[in-house]
Image (tube, rainbow, N blue to C red; front, side, top):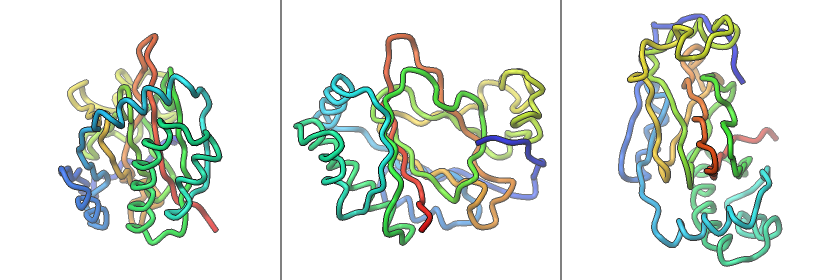
Length: 220
């Protein structure tokens, strides 16, 4: 997941943020490494998420297509009222993700978390990942120009991110909000080596739970 990186300030990378899902077409701009669709979850989805978390505990890894997402989720969780509502939103995101990247299917992870899954800042060696947090604290990330990439992985010399010199101060840390949907470019995106988005899972407070959805490319 993480590794030492040669610093690369020859790239210019920016975030693009908007209130409509059409913002995702900007992922093909070469100077971007995160695209964020800011959205607020409706009360119906929020209620379904609460019910889902109360009745499920496991992390789920599935292969889905735009055509079978509902069916696959029903097979995994049963056709309850909460999963029916939640699957409507997930199916929409799967359809958008596959359409945007011309993919026949996607790898879906749905995790209920009570601790940080990837607590250190890192880059992913993938083309691009969709992430959204339905409940709880959401993903943290750093602007490209705020990162000393020599401090990733073993370059931190055993020091916490906040002390390693990876970034200057806590004000450098950006955070998504629950409900936001983001596309995170990784190191395997075209011409992105050395400029994949640096991000991490935030700590989850005691007694709280986080519902995280990710979508990934699947190899044939």
